[in-house]
Image 1 (spheres, rainbow, N blue to C red):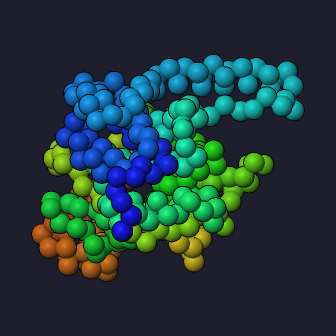
Image 2: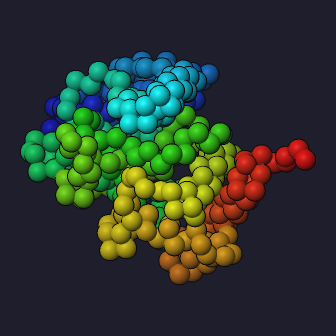
Image 3: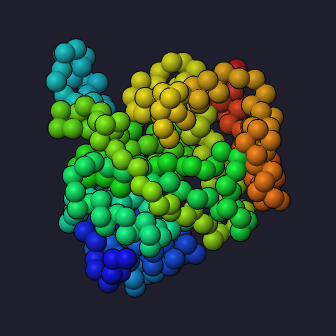
Length: 333
């Protein structure tokens, strides 16, 4: 095994907001990295102090300022297009926390590893990362996650494997823009968007230039069910926007759906089919708990299945609200 005292030439990016319960373990698990950034969103707890005490560089992200920049550039683009429909002025994009960080932070190293506060990079995974960043076989790597819930690894039910492209050359990777960043109450961080690798000409090279690491990372949230529900309440707003795009055939950018692909490509294909199915809350429970053997996860698996069914119902209600009332609970006559 490689010595753990040697710093690995990787810049770690940790998005955070009020994560004092998760940050100590998260920062400890990435201590082998040569550089650590915590990108905070005006936390009101001890997140900033904890990060600084452990040697991380703390950067503040202001989503309201980013939205103001986007609105101004979008206005300028529309004015220019009215004057000249063939304008060469690039169309602005609304960046959430991770893409803003990838565009803005002064990384000291070519490789960046994105780690959420409730994720843990194991020693075996670090050993593997240390080896792969030495060669040029790929421009990015997918990491597999083990999700823990109520003290149990949710191995069954479709939660494993769970591939995410988290290690990549920071100049080549950005999170996909699905055109739903405008939806309110989804937070200032990317939700379930995936990283796309592009070459110097902007071509999508993810399929041929992304590899898969063998060792897993752990997803262990030290907060409570209240926080899980609050987080998924935000996620369901985002999912409703994604469902709307899929139903309208407007999802053109990002991960390309592929039934025979691996990880996100296959998931994106199946989701394109899923949005057309009826009785999705019931189907979600049956699929997770019975067809994908979620019952083997024990009592935690049953609770997780019920919560996923409720989550699917929330998405459906918010989708109806979005498509019928423009995202408002009621509209004036």
